[in-house]
Length: 98
Image (tube, rainbow, N blue to C red; front, top):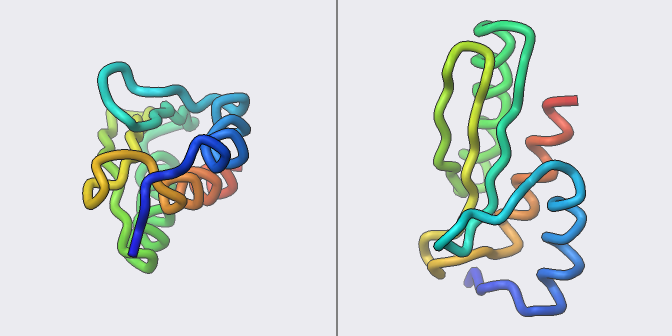
C-alpha cells in the first residue's frame, strides 16, 4: 500500500527535486514543475513518453499543455499527499525531458 512520505523521506526524496526546479504547491501536499520545449510537437511527444511511465506505474499526473509548455502537478490522491510514487515519477519526467 502507498503511504505518505515521512519527514525523513521528504528530505531524502523531495528536497533534491525542489533544487531541480520543482516547487511545493501552495495549499496542497503536492509538487509542481513547468517544462518548456522547443515547440508543440516536442511537448506532446514528451507527454506521451511520460504518460507511458505513468500508466505503467499506475500513477497519473495532473497536467496541462499550452503550446510548448507542460505544467505538471504530482500528488498521490489515495493518501491525500506526497508519496514515493510522486518522487519516482518526477525523476522519470526530468530524465525524459533531458
